[in-house]
Structures are given as C-alpha cells and as structure tokens.
Amino acid sequence: MIVALHPEPATHRRFDPARRSAAAASMDGSRSSQENNIEESLCIRDADVRRHHERSLREYNQMWNRLLKKFHPEGIPWPATIFYNILSGSEIFEKHYELIAQDIAVQQSRIEGVLDIGTGPAWLLLALRNHLPDARLCGVDISDAMVATARRNFERFYPHDKTELTVGNADNLPFDDESFDCVVSTGSLHHWKNPIAGLNEIHRVLKDGRHAFIYDLVRKLPKEIACEVRRKFGSFRLTLLGLHSFEEPFLDAREMLSLAEKSLFRSAEIRFVGALCCIHLKKSTA
Ligand SMILES: C[S@@+](CC[C@H](N)C(=O)[O-])C[C@H]1O[C@@H](n2cnc3c(N)ncnc32)[C@H](O)[C@@H]1O
View (cartoon, protein in one colour):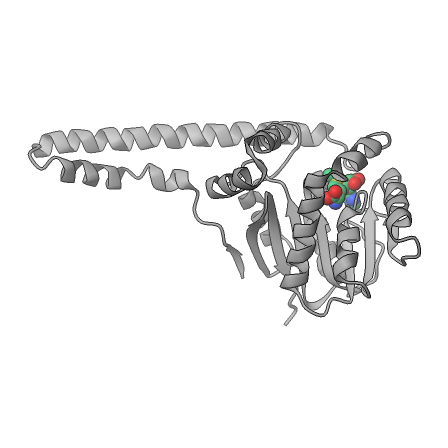
C-alpha cells in the first residue's frame, strides 16, 4: 500500500471555481443568473490560467532539475568534504540529526543493526550511537574522502567504537541479503544516479517486516511545513534553504513517493520531520 500522508497542496483547494462562484452568489443574492454565469465562466478561466501557469512552472522545474542532475556529482569529493564536514557539524545540523535519530528510535523498536546510506561525515550515526549503544552501526558512502572524514569523526567522539564505515554505492550495497533491521539515509537520495536501484538494494539488505527511513530536502516545502520551519528556525534560514534548492536537484514529495511506487517496496508513506521529507518504507514479502 503506497500512501501519501501530507494533505493536498493548498493551491488545489484555493482555486476551486465552483466554490468561488457559490460564495459570490451567496454574497450577492440580487444578481441576475446572467451575471452569475459570467462570474462563473471568469472563475473557470481564472482557474485554467492558474493551472496552466502551475504546469509550466512544474515543467520548467523538472527541466532545471534534469540539467542540475547531469552536472551534479554523485559523491562529494575532496576538498568539498572539508567544507561539508564543517557546515554539517554546526549546531543547526546537530539539532536535525538528533531529531532524526529520535524519529528512528521512536518509529522502530528492537533495532539491532542500522545501515546509513550516503552517511557523509557520519553525524547521524554518531547521534544514533547515543540512542542505540549496543546496535551494529554501518555507514556507506560513494566518496572515499567522505568515508575518511566519517572515520576521523568517530575516532574523535567514540575512539573504540566498532561502527563499520565503508566505501560503496547505494545501487550496489556491499552487504548480504537481510542484514539489517533498519536502513536510513539523510540528504543523499537526490544525489543517486539510480534511485530506484538504490531503493531495491535497501529492500534486499532489509530483514522482512522491518523499516527504512529515507530523508531528504525537497524542492518546495508544503505551506504548513514551511510555516513550522520558519517558526522553529527563523525566516533567514528558511530563505537559505529555498536558495539552496536552486543549485541542488531536489525532488518534491510526490516524486519521492513515486520512486517508492516503482521499487520493490509494497508499503510506503511520506511525512515531514523538521524540514526533511521522509519516505517511510516497510519490507513485507508475505
Ligand atoms: C549531502 S551529503 C549528506 C551526508 C549525510 N547523510 C548528512 O546528512 O550529513 C550526501 C552524501 O551522499 C553520498 N552519496 C551520493 N551518492 C551516493 C551513492 N550513490 N551511494 C552512496 N553514497 C552516495 C555523497 O558522497 C555524500 O556524502
């Protein structure tokens, strides 16, 4: 069962011509039926124009995204790893990793093994270590410079930890079938050249009945989520996030769900955790 939990976008509700003409009629009972008909046809035209405008904007966005994806490197190479490590080690990111670690720990009980795909500097695994002191933690990243950074971060904060950090691609994971009872990923999906193959690999390494949580930023936040993010983190950071989406090939929530529909997973839902959109996948072979 593939379901979207987020409500229909506000734009779909706002420009309902039937509702607008009914409202107009109730406001002015003295109007002739001809005037009402004109009003109604104007509303329909207005809705058509807006629908056309939205479609053009969507097509333009998709074109821009395809272009970005073409030139966007799949893995983050050195020296960008240095910059990303500093940026993602900042307080605001730390809050996000903690929020996600809590989300994972709450959503699933008895976690013995977790795989983080596109682990980057491994801040999420470090946050998860606090919640899951005895679990087997593994991180994989396509960039060997990132894996080296992740190892240094673990060495610094948990010098004797057994967390496994490996170079590998999401679409060809270096792990046996059914090795993990939880698979996670943050901010990496939009980098993957073969996202459906990546989701199918997650399905392969996940144990039956267990869950995967794939979090990523989206091109446009739904209005109510943007308001919540603005309230928590301020307008300046929300604007930075908006600007960031011009130079990264982010998907939107619907596109993330549609990837899940095309994968081997039969159960998926979309929800937001902070500013991140999460595809929550459940493996069930029965
Ligand atoms: C924006 S960073 C996010 C890092 C980390 N998950 C975080 O939230 O800070 C994206 C990471 O995904 C990695 N990556 C991109 N494509 C990948 C792939 N196909 N397989 C594995 N890792 C990948 C990049 O090298 C990079 O480290």
